[in-house]
Amino acid sequence: AYENYRKPGRFLDLVYHENARALLHEANIYRIRYSSAETHLSIQLMNSGNIQPDVPGGAMEPGFADYLQNQILTFGNDEEKEKHGLFLKRNKEKFAGLDETSGMPVAMEGLNIINEMECKIKCSSSKVKYVGNTSDLLYRSKQRNPNPKGLRLKKVSEISKERRISRFNIMLNCRLLALPPL
Image (cartoon, one colour):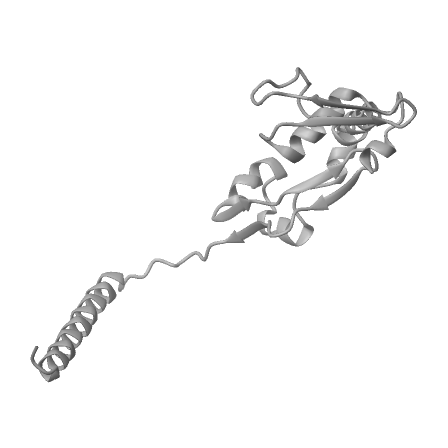
């Protein structure tokens, strides 16, 4: 289906090769051509293992590359940046005396970010497909208030732990004594 979609001048061979390499990873890549007019079949080895073509990183169609560079990756002027703040109003009220740049470290304190979301972009249609079983996680760990009785509680928990261990050992010894001799 992919080969039928290709028309002369529409795709670059290097892009085709890079796309095939992305799908097949380390496997050998073959291009098979059949011409019914000449009853000719040709099989061409596209790469041999570790030899990789000199393709620019992120090989893609020229039209999509222009779109990506001009529409997605370019930043607007400073006025447009000011319109879209990073924080929501309800969250900014907590840091009212701070501007956005100085409030950032304070707001990020205790925040855990795990970036594992994967997505694939279809260059010809600019559609984004999210890879299944991947996700981003953003959470704030609970901040515990310092407990002045903390040392006392720690000592109590150690005593409780020792009691549980002692009861377990007694129960284990009783069960071992109840077993029939070998």
